[in-house]
Length: 299
Image (cartoon, rainbow, N blue to C red; front, side, top):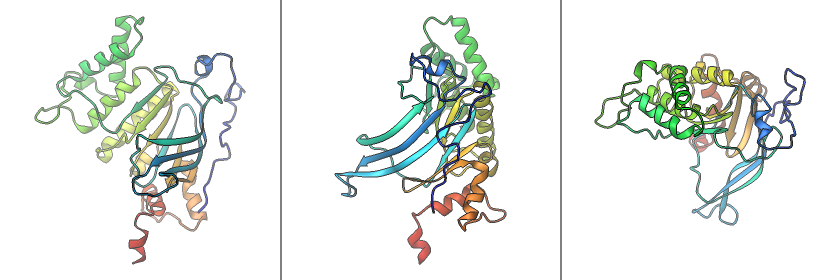
């Protein structure tokens, strides 16, 4: 099965003002500020990790090969594939990652990354968690009143206003539900109003209803703040899957499909693998590209 790259490739269409989304400016600090957002492109990415099992070349085994794609402001790219490698500390990386057509070093607050594991202090309330984080993350020159307002607005945007005085909770401490904790983690990353947001399993551990609410809120904020969002996600429900603008399917480190989410069904159908009626498209794609159980299937 070959890979599919959307015709736009790494050259997004002109914006509403008729300007090219990829723009060259003198000062790197202006690359993102002068635009409405961050146009992210990656070209021919190769990643290899140190291998302890003797596989690979020179002690390194490839986990990503020739990946190419893009992400635009106000949109979410879902990255899906079989569960795989845990990245080692010793890696080799080649390829290009560009923002608005340039290779730049991002300034603090421009990008945010939400990890799969939630690092929250159990004994703090929602309000204390977000307000303390705002004091630490936002610029020193910003007045405290503005920091408080930013924190309160972020809490409201994630629908946590009724839980502001509830403790986070954990082992032996009654507190928030799993979905509420996930929303608190997202709040912490949204405080700086990042232009680029990376989400690692944002729906992990949530039921279908909570997953949809969390992702639907992220979609609204993505469009409101013109964020560029990439989300690694496993087994989204049909409703959650429909929220994504673009889809990147990976298998054995190679891009199987990259393009609009709605066009994936046609891609698989053309390649002789149509999605059966009454089956979740996301489940069908993952089962099709997963090679872990090929030998079991043959028996």
